[in-house]
Image 1 (cartoon, protein in one colour):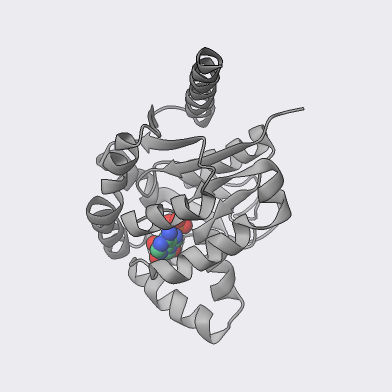
Image 2 (cartoon, rainbow, N blue to C red):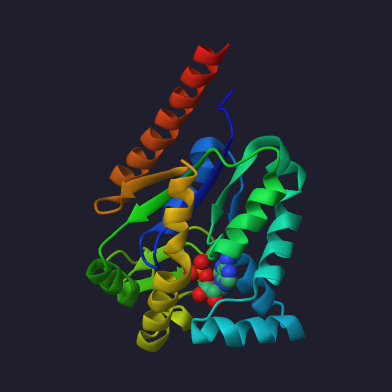
Length: 229
Ligand code: AMP
C-alpha cells in the first residue's frame, strides 16, 4: 500500500503550488486541502460570510487567522485526513497560523514543509497568463489552454482569469507574501522541517524533485529511528 503523507507546501503566488499539490495528493493518495479553494467555495455559496470573504480576497489581502485555522482544523479532523494525511496548500501563511497548525497536529507533526522556489520575475509572468476552472479549480494558462474553447478538460466548467489575478491585487499579494509568509521559511528551517525545491522547469520535473525531498526526509528519519532503536 502507498504510505500516506502530511505535507505543507509553501511558495509565492504563481510558484506552481496548486499544480504540485494536486499531483502530490494523487501520488500519496491523500486529500488536497487548499484554503484558497475552501474560501472560493464559501464565496460561491453566496452566503453573507462568503461576501465578506470575497471582498478581502479580491483586494489580495489575508483573511483572519482564527477563521482560517477553524476551517483547517475542521477539515483535518475528517476521517480521510486522519487516516492518510494531507497536502496542505495555502496554509499556513503567517507565523500565527504555523503555531496553530503545530498545536493542532501535536503530538504528531507534518512530515515535511516544501518551499517551491521560483524567481519573482517568472511568477509575475505566470500569474498574468494564469487561467482557472471556476468549478473544479484546475489550472491552465494562455500558453497551455484547455483543449476546447476555454472549457475545462476535467469537468467542463468555464475557464477564466481569477478575480485576484489583476496587476494591483498580484502586487499586493506578493508584498504580503514577503512580509507575512516568507518568515515561515526561517521558522520551519529553524525547526528542521523545511526542504527548498527549485520550482523552475516542467511540472513533472518539479514534482520529481518534491517527491525526492519527501523520500529523503523519510529515509533520514527512519535512519535516525533505526540508529536510536
Ligand atoms: P490562494 O488560492 O492560496 O492563492 O488563496 C487566495 C486568497 O485566499 C488569498 O489571497 C487570501 O485572500 C485568501 N487565503 C487563502 N489562504 C489563506 C490563509 N491561510 N490565510 C489568510 N488568507 C488566505
